[in-house]
Image (tube, rainbow, N blue to C red; front, side):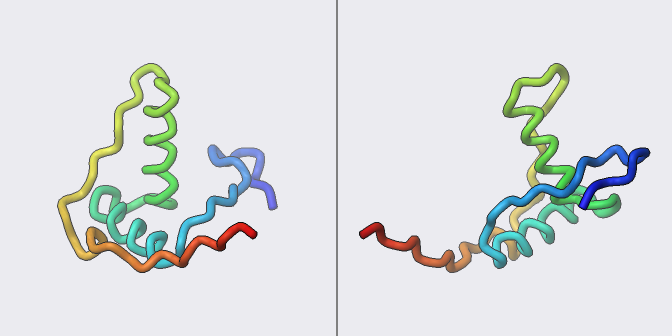
Length: 81
C-alpha cells in the first residue's frame, strides 16, 4: 500500500507495540493533538526528528497524567532455548 503522490505522508510503516499501549498512546496523543490525520503518527514523527537532532526539532510535549499513565500488562517475552 502506498500513499498518493500528492500526499505528505509515506506508505504506512509497521511498528510493533502491545495493543493496550497503542490504544492508550492514542488517547494520550489526542489530549495534545485533538485534530489531524493521526495524532500518534504526529507525535512519533516529532520524537524522531528530535531524536535525530534535526534543526528546529523539539521533544513532543507530554499530556498531563491520565488513564493512559497506568501500566498495562505486557505479554511475556518468549524464552530463548
